[in-house]
Every structure is written in C-alpha cells, then in structure tokens.
Amino acid sequence: MALEPFGKSDALTMGVELELQLISNHDFDLSSSANDLLELLRRKPFPGVVTPEMTQSMIEIATDIQREHGPLLAQLRQTRDTLVNAGDRLNIALAGGGTHPFQRWFEQRIFAKPRFEELSTLYGYLAKQFTVFGQHVHIGCSTADEALFLLHALNRYVPHFIALSASSPYSQGVDTLFDSARLNSVFAFPLSGRAPFTLSWDEFSQVYFTKMESTGVVKSMKDFYWDIRPKPEYGTIELRVCDTPLTVERAAGLACYLQALCRYLLERHEEDPAEDDYLVYTYNRFQACRFGLDGTMVHPKTRQAIGIREDIQQTLERLKPHAVALKSEAAMDEIARATREGNHATYLRGQYAQSGQVPGVVQASVRAFRAAAS
Image: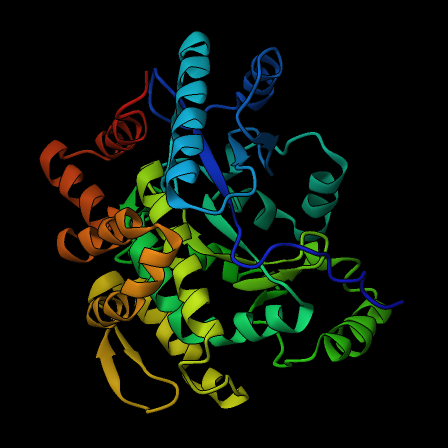
C-alpha cells in the first residue's frame, strides 16, 4: 500500500513543536507530573496544542500554523506564560534544554498511551533513555516534490541548526564535552539518520515506503526518526535536529531562520541536491554536536572546510532580502546574536562555572524559560 497522498499547505508556512522538561522545585530533578499538568491545562483555553510525550516528565507544545515571526513569537510567549502559571499552581517548573543534566533514565515512567507503551516494548531501555527534549519545525510545501527538494537541499545546513540550538552539554551528572548530547540518544534508534535520496514523491511513496512497509518494520512516517522527514498529512517537511532552546525567543528565531533558508533555496540559488552531498553529512553533523558553533564543516559541493559559525554568518548575509520579505529581521538578529554570544550549551557551562553544581544548571534553565512570564 502506498503512502497517503501529500497534503495541501501554503508554501513557507511554519509550525513549531517544543518538548519541555517538567522540573521539581524541591530538588530540580525531573518530575513525573505530566498527568497533573495536562489535566489542569484542559480546564482553560490553551494557545496552541499541548500533548503528552514518551515519559511522564515531559510534555510537547505545538503552535498554530504561522506565517511571520511576530505572531509566532507572540503565541510562543503566551504559551510559555500559560505553562509557567499552571506549573506554579502545581509547584513544578518548566524548562527547555535538550537533556536534563542529572536525571536517571531508569527512574522515568512511560506515559500510559498505547503508542508509547508499544515503543517501550519494542525499544526496551532506549525508550526511557529517550527522555530528551527537542524542537521540531514544520515548513509548508506547495507540492510533494517540492518537499523532497527542500528536505535534501537543506542537508548541508543541518549543522547550523544543531549548533545554534545546542543546549545539552550535561547528561547523567557530567559534562559530556558535546554541545548537543541529546542527538546521541536519537542516533541509537535504528530508523534515525537521513532520508533516502530521491526527488520524486512517487518514487518515495510507491517504491521506497511500500518496500519498507512490506518488511513490517514501519507502519507510518512516525516510525522514521530522520533528521528531516516529510509529513504528508500536514503537507510539510519537519526539521528534527534541534535541541529545545532555553528561551522561546531562540525557538522562534530558529524557525524563521529555516523559513528564510527555504525561501532562498526555492529560488534555486544553489546547485540541486545530489546523493554525493551526503558523503560529508555524518561528519558535519558530528562536528556540530561535539563542538557546536566552534565546529568545522565541509561544504558538500566544493569540498572546502569552513567554520560552522562563519558559515552561518555568511548565510545570514545571503538571507537578508528573504528576511525582509518574510518580516523576520528580528529573528535573524536573534540568530546573529547566538553566533556572537554563543549557544545555550555555552551559557549552561557558564552557569555551572558560577554555581559549581549541576542542579545550578537546572535552576538557570528554569529562570531562562520563565524570564518574562507574567
């Protein structure tokens, strides 16, 4: 059976999903409070959508379909304020960050939902180790083939998003020396990594997916944990490599950076993507996870090495007219600020240096998330 038809959406529309940590105000460990928080949030209007995630110590929020930075950021701030106020009533805090710095995975509880229980049975301890927190960004595509073009054209820019969003230097109580340790947990899953190279939706749907489905390995696109995957039910592509940032301002900036980049790529300013682009993909991704903005990447077309920070700064210059057209200049300012001041992994290491203890890192994450909450 072929994959479902690719849905209709307006090109370059956006949607943002954030997986958030539920934190105990007592000891700053993760708190298995998802049921209580979700029940409280059901009693009042919620800006967007809030759903459970794999374990009881995390939730996921999703925005409405957005077109511009201003309304996107406004909804994310309203969502943050609603969550913070609800958490205060339950004596729990919320935080971004790709990993919790010292939680013990074996203490986590799987959320009682059939799909999560099925995944827990299939993946064993990996399911609880998947208590990590990411930002996903959807970009609307006018056609299915356009979606596959963007998915593969973005391959060389994946290190940008890893490095800019990296906020998971600590895991199991120690500095991992990675800016994004979260992605190491994702890579453990057998259907992670990159999508197969094809620019034809008919080939992807009727050949590749049909073969994979016939093996019994997959039932839907949800079974793929690719860095970027098509979402035919929404008519989008979904970027999945980002850690959840510490602030909604950074989250909105990342989404609009992706939106502007897609607009630029659709104007065919670069050579079309090819299978050989992926020769350096894993290396580039590792550099971004390990060293963040200080990493080095190899351009897949020219084979030239360049610093990730420098490549982002050059890309921001190319995106200026697109940012103006999309009304996202403020978002580009947020991304430029990150290249100057460092990503949130750098910030968290600075907080550890000040406090001298890992719980102090969690406290800093909580403060950052609720910075302007009313």
